[in-house]
Image (tube, rainbow, N blue to C red; front, side, top):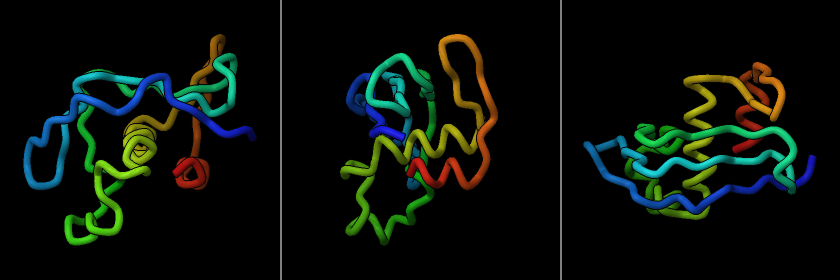
Length: 101
């Protein structure tokens, strides 16, 4: 599988409590290098905990670090384990979700 990419950077985050963030601007993650393949949509208003990284570990894996956006995709897939394409959708399992992260 080719390297995935995002439709837009992760912006407009709002910290809503000690562990959760509100994503006010949604984005799409494409699983392939081009935009004709499979994708995952993260909608406006999605709430994330950045793959449940505990706060003491934010020093090593900060929510605003280089893995933040894919952690949001990871959280989205755990809540709704479906990967879409232009013409269909398919379920994805635990192993595939973790492989994306």
